[in-house]
Image (tube, rainbow, N blue to C red):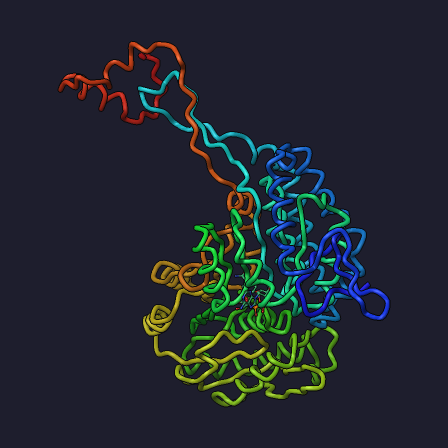
Length: 500
Ligand code: NAD
């Protein structure tokens, strides 16, 4: 089965498939641009029937996701290998198992997350019921990039389903093998009247964004993030933006270089460096740079052998465009390790660049490849100034044996996430919110935070229709005495007072 080419397509029940002689077959749903309107209306109508609201429906969809992951594990691994030459190990750790864990967590906690949350009351509302109702937004759009094309589709989808929404998924057209599975296989595991997959690139996504959604969840680069935000603004649609940037990694002089090198090299080269939270550059003293370079060489050789191109553990760059961009960065600073590239294989060697200047291109843009520049600083203060002169990063790393140093970096900087003495391990905890700040994004997800992101927290107060006499205080004609009593009654108390 082929996906539609050139135009947008609704996958699943309404596949725009190529028929014999490449004539498109228009099945239940049309593939023309104006078909978005009809399909979105159907999804919205499905939401208004209330079908997605019961816990049983949500659980059934989540179980569907679980079955999708189990039944198609091998196919998914092969697709990830095809798109990014991702090893089975990295696919399992960063795409399949992590998605499965999110599904399991949501299934275990669904009913407690959905429960109304009782809140404290004031004297005037002591006899009433005050609570936060977590209600679904309605129809939400999830736009996905190519670097973790399964994880970044399913993890937000789990939150959207758990919160009771209807969903339009827009996978990345760049990671084609996964896009194909998400379009052809995933819909079979979900109620297709409530969930749809849209295919296409920037042109089709722009068309889709002309329509009104109740929430848009976008993961990708900041440039497209601005386009999405501008489109959302037209409908005042709330958005979550999961963007990227440059994640600093400060290394203190007291560190054991080999420990730091192992940890940084692995996180930098994981998925061939195409990770939004990867340590993007090292900040350290000249002396530490000299100790780190041989340690990094040691780590890279241990992980990927003398010729990393032959290692099955190292992924590849997604496409020619990104390969060329990365190749251009290899000319910055001085190559201390690696530096090789092979366009026919989309291979960039794990590379360390030393004596890099702040003004060079490798320090101006997000690297998104297995290249690690090192910038030298004279002190911790200088490192912190360097970090604070730049946009707030998605993640920040600090290595030191002294907890005081780690605490200082944490206290005097800002970022979406922070990890002391390691790479992006903080994001393996679904108990921590994941997201950026400033130019690295807005909004949070993972675990319960995903559920909250896709829920409207409705403020509810249910009052008694009786005891109208008490309300006399608030009605005109106003008096100073009534005002005094009313102000006391409106003060929030922690004790439960039953005077009124
Ligand atoms: P991408 O090119 O696949 O684009 C992301 C999505 O936006 C795709 O679905 C694409 O079709 C759509 N798109 C692209 N151009 C568009 C346009 N002009 N109008 C409307 N839609 C458009 O992926 P990418 O942006 O190259 O992904 C890499 C970036 O994503 C990096 O900056 C990385 O740091 C960031 N990222 C962030 C996170 C996070 O969780 N914060 C995770 C992964 C990647």
